[in-house]
Length: 267
Ligand code: HH2
Image (cartoon, rainbow, N blue to C red):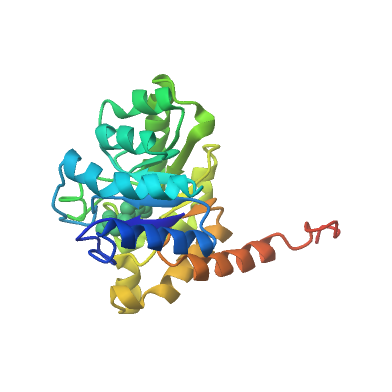
């Protein structure tokens, strides 16, 4: 999943793709580099980010979703507002990526009606407050319980279970230790029976671990992606699609050793 941020203030590429033409060209590049899904977002969720009205978000994302969907790409819309999701779906988006996991009471019914995909992500608190000393009993158990509850709510509102993806929300109300534990124990979320999305690309825990600024976090991002693949991630939400594709392919090839092309399974 390649990230197309149509925002002035995203943490790593804010302002770079606010112009629709630039965002569309960027989406095309990510698709050519191997992205299977283009995730178009018009509101930053970084800690402390300013809120954006639905009208403003629609103005940012709809032209980009329209162009990328028309060009034949599979598009997801990264929004927590049902009004924005509705317009993006009309414009051709096939997936709603909701970082609030149905925080908008109209979101589940909309997705049920539209028969679109739905990504449910865990967040503790709101983007404004989420990094204020997050505490968990057991971060993986808490995230798993939250995602189970949100998945039940989505299904109850008529969303087909087969259309749901789950995401632990790396960096959303988590310390460095929480993020590392979630990646290491990602397999426990796969136990919920739905594809697991991992979004670690360029995030601040990588900066804390490596001492690198946001523009120098590719190596750290790739390490997180490879560990995610090793622990069972099905979808990687990333900025650097070409490099991540190669890293993920090699990691998956190692994991698939012995079960490719009729070779006998290694013991
Ligand atoms: N992370 C961000 C935004 N949306 N969606 C999912 N499913 N998973 C994530 O981990 C995730 C997400 C934050 O990253 P980014 O879009 O690069 O930055 P910003 O929120 O500042 O636009």
